[in-house]
Amino acid sequence: MTRRALRFLMAGSLATTAAFGTCGPARAQSFAPNAAMQALHEKAKAEKEVVLWAPAAIEGSWVPEQFGKRFPGIDLTFTPDLQSGTKIIAEARAGRHSVDVWSFAIGGMIEVQKRDLLATEDWERYGIDKGNIFFNGQAAATHNFIYTSIYSKAAVSPADLPKTWNDYLDPKWKGKLVAQAFLLPRMMGFFALEWGPERAEQWGRTLIDDQKMLIVNTPSGSYLKSGERALAVGESISLA
Image (cartoon, rainbow, N blue to C red):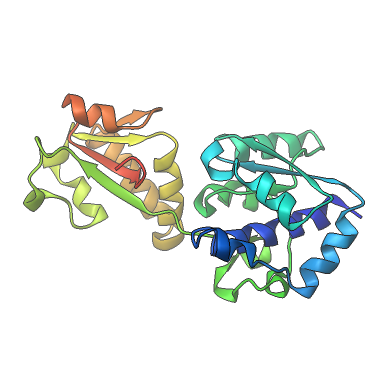
């Protein structure tokens, strides 16, 4: 049995976990794999291990325990890594790979997918809705990540807040914006899917070059609290 089989099994498990994970212990314990998943579980036991990468610990540190309960006989090794996409590409160039399952934002998967490094799978046989299948079967969506804007109440009136993404290009925001180096490019990946690459790139370049948006490697909340910046672009709800 190849590692690809484990990859399919794990991905199916993650999708189901996302569906039940917010419903409390009683609901989560009612999980039962469908026939296709059960058959794959039996075949995958021969390999005994599967490796999962995700952006951060909060994204997947809970998975090994839950996966072990649902699919006993297989150990799951989890590694959080914001630069996992870059590492997957680098490993492929070296003719090897050390990850079976990659959980990441679809926007952040584009460069890896363009290099044909993702396996194709019949996700529907695991109960995944057709509308949640991307890249012609190379990825399946498990949940939504909502990008939000956070502003300093001391510096911005609610009436003046941007209403559209293009409103950030208004000159009044020059020198007042901040964004995370990790989140912004991935949000722009979704914009590229929606708007087309040229418009998305121009939007980002205008924010950075003309609006002098500050790009940081840490959560932007401290820059709003200090008054150095007034509005964070494309932040996470957890930071809010």
